[in-house]
Image (tube, rainbow, N blue to C red; front, side, top):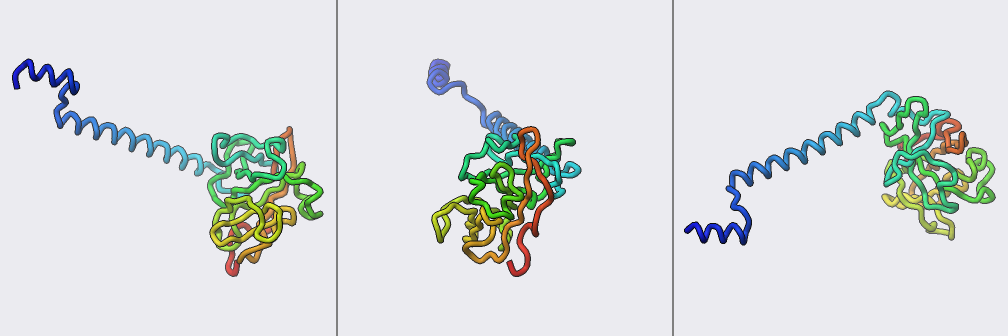
Length: 212
């Protein structure tokens, strides 16, 4: 190629980069990306391995948002809208700042309801109309993700979309539809300094058990 043609090609297409240079650059970018992923994974693993991270919710723990743009923020009753949607939360030790996310069995569902709709038992472990239940379905251990109209009736309920079990949080999260045989474990709540806190350990068994 003549010098003039080479110059024209450079102007039109940019500098000619040898294949070896492009390969090295691709490998470097790939290595950097892999390193960033590994660093993030190690950071998450280190957080979940902290002492106390796998302990069940303890009296006095605060509750923090478990996902989304507000993840890690302390939850106050006023942060929840009356009637839903549900909010997923982890307990957090306020003394050590350890979030108890080392076990999926520690995640809870929060929803704010009209206190007048709660039965006496449920009202006893609610705080400002907010109730908390295990986020793990008692049927097969799937995570409960939906807050939708009940299959039978016009009220919103927790729904496990794996096998369609539904739980009414107004009545202690008892089963109102589907194959589950046990209600969800309830987590009694209180408030301290304006934030939602854990008043006692779980009421009932958390997660799936033989026989549902």
